[in-house]
Each structure stands twice: as C-alpha cells, then as structure tokens.
Amino acid sequence: WYDLYAQRWPAFADCFRFAGGAEDWCYLYRKTLQGKCECMLEVFDREKKLGFAMAAMPARVEYDATLGAYVARYLSASPVKPETIPEAEGHRLRVCPASARVQLQPSIEQKGGLGNLKLAYGEDGDPELVPGLPQYPGRVLEGTEGLQVGQGVELQWKMQMASPFGWWYGTLEQLQKVPGSQLAQATITFGHFPMTSRWYRLDVRFGDSSLRPCAFGGYTGGIRATTEAERRHWMRFFPVEPVRF
Image (spheres, one colour):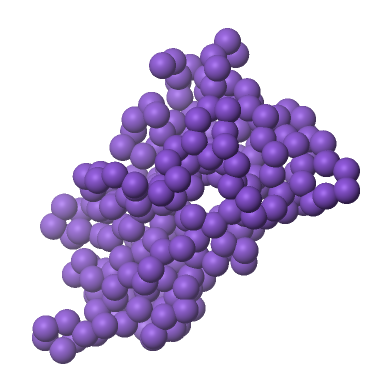
C-alpha cells in the first residue's frame, strides 16, 4: 500500500514518512481520497504568478478526489484564495527540504504521533487527520555550512513580518565569513531577472537566528545549499522569458 500511495501522492508520502507514526498506508490512502488528510507542504510556482517565480511557498495541502486535484491553502498575512493544483502537477509540491528539517522541525509533536498532523474524531466517530499548528515556516535557518560559490541556493525571504518564509532560488555569487562571529555575508544572483533589474543581485548577512531587513523590501532569514537533483528540479520552473516588473 505504501508503494501505491507514494506513486499517487509522493509529497504526501514524504510528509507522512518524515513525521512518523504512519503505518497503515491503506487507511491513509482511503482518508486521502476522502479529503481527510492535510499536509504542510511547499508549493513551487505559486498560482503561476510572476511574483512567485522561482519560489516555493508554504501551504496546507489536501487532495480533492471530486476535482482530481490538490487544494493548496497558502499561509499568508492577508487572506488568499486556495489554489487548485491538478494531480498531474504534483511535482510542484514538496516537503520542507531534507537538509533543513532537523533545524526547522516541520513535524511538531502532536497527540497521535503524526507530526504536523494529529488524530481527531469526526462526527461519525471515525478517526480523521487534521493539521497541527505550523511553526517551521517562520523559523530562521541557522548556519553557513555547505555553501560554495557558484552553486544553487535557496534563500528564506518574506515581504511581511507576519508572513511565513518562502524559499527563493538563486546562485551564490560571493561568500565571506564575518570574523569573530557565526555570521557570513553572501551575494546571491537571481537569474530569472534581467541583469539590469534591481531584483537581480542581493547582499545578505545570515548565519544566526536573526530576521534581517532586506534591500528588496521585507525580511531575509537563512540560506541553504541545493543538491544537484534539487537544482534540476528548480530548473523545471525557470521562466522562458526574463521576469520584468
């Protein structure tokens, strides 16, 4: 049953396996079809809007069998309508990146041991899976390890203080450690913008748990290196034409 589940809903399967406590995959398959499973995931290419190009944004996601699609409810400081994502676009969904999970703790211990999901009981007395309280999208990723100039990176950035972080993909152009501290100074370029755009290059200080004002507006957090497989996946969403505002 796990193989069937993972083949149909790979991001959900990854979510449940990381959270722990998922053993009856037949039960989860049935509940997912009934729309009673909801996972905290990250969505690439949110609403396919240029403003979210090359970004992965946190959302509560469930599967709606009547639509044959996922329904993503984005975490936001302001009201946002859910996005319907066709099942064929399941590659747009992922769990918090593996290298960041230990620090950011996307799975929060809840009664029932299902991490970012917990057990509750519906009106029919049947167990249902409902979300726990999300905290990780607001946590700053600490550290400067594993970064190399020229590699792809993901930057935590958000526009509003009350919003969660999204991950924004770019290339690490420069990296310097700040003497006598755990901090580093990075320059990141965002290749989906023209080189003449104000959004093309950004200097970021990072490494501790502090939230810092961003020259683009909003706030930055931490930076993580991407694997080659992750880089290739990001390239699936690289705009055909440079993004211009």
